[in-house]
Length: 253
Image (cartoon, rainbow, N blue to C red; front, side):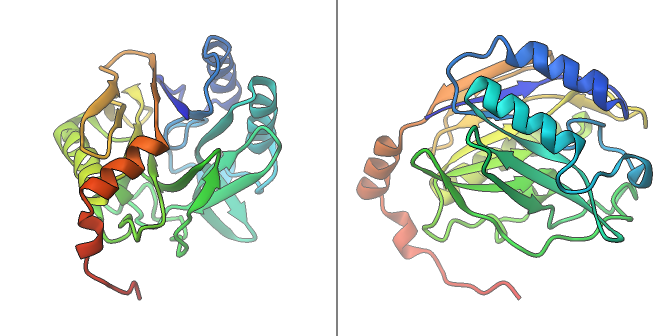
C-alpha cells in the first residue's frame, strides 16, 4: 500500500482557501492509496469552535468525499465537528467508495486553552483498508502510549497533528517510539508556518517502518512525502521478532 502525507502551511480559519491549496497539491499526487492531512487541516488549530464547527456530514466532509472519489485515494485528517451542543476535534477517513470512519481526539491539549470547549473522545478506532488495519490518533494523543498500544490488532498508526516547532524533538522521538514499541508502520502528518495565534510549526512529517526507520520525511517546507508499505514485510518481521507476544495486558477504564 502506498501512502502520502501532504505538509502545508494552513491559512488561518479560511476553509475555501485551504481547500483550493489542497486540491492543487493533490492533483499532482498520483497512484497513492491514502492521502494524509494534518490536524484541523481546513482552519488551523483554532478555538473559534462556534463559528467554524460543522455538522458531521457537511462542507468539509463533502469536500473529502469528492476528493477521494476524484483521485481514487482515501483522504483523512481532522477538523471541528459539532454534534448537538458538543464540539469535537474529529479525525475523518473517507475512502473512494464513500465509506467513512471517524475518531474523536481523546487527549485534549490543556496547556493553551484552545481545546477547553471541546468534548473528549472515548472510543479507540481500528478499521481495515486495502489490507491494512489502521489506528488513528491526533497530535497530543501521541504522548500517551497506552492509548495507542498495539493489541495485535493494527498495522499502521496515523497521527494528524499541529505540533509546534518548540517541541519538534519530542514529535520526532515519539513517532519513532510508537513505531518501535508497537511494531507498526507510523505516519505522522504535521503542518508548517505560523498560525493566527502566533505559534510556529516546523513540519517534520514522516513515515516510519516498524523498526523505527525513516522511510520518508519532510523538513520545514510545503511538500508531499510518499512511501510504500508492505504487509508481507511487516508480518515477516513480527514472525522473526515476536516481541508482541511478551506484551503486558492492561485495561483502559
